[in-house]
Image 1 (cartoon, helix red, strand yellow):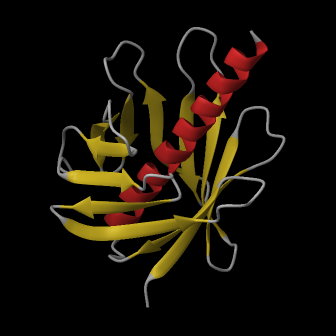
Image 2: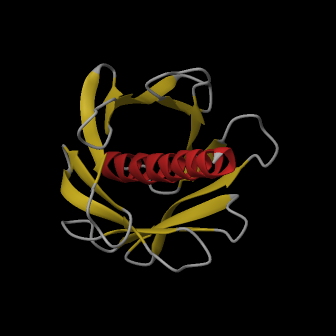
Length: 171
């Protein structure tokens, strides 16, 4: 049986906390944003209290680029510009051929590595919070971590876009 992970934003969190849980709602990973005045926010992801990886948005880049430092290696994760669907891909490192592609209405996505689907999600369209349930088709620890990274990137981009819309509506 395949493993299922869910990702949800914690409501009323000043720093921003995003939890990744299993099917029984047990905490598997927790992402917390560390506020900074001079640099982009650093997201630290922990599992059982141990730091698994950190993510920081690259400041000067043509496309949305995130720098990932992890125990499985360091790499850049990019969002493809000028695409009708969300597309993220690992730009360098050992997992260079890994790609996540969202649906047109942004309700689901698939993660593939060397053209093999390793995880897929379907979000619940009408929830108060963004929530995605992701099925891991390959249950290796590395695949799980890569999937969590893509899940988190998708969630962070949605939060960033929502905040930009609020700012533009307030001006």
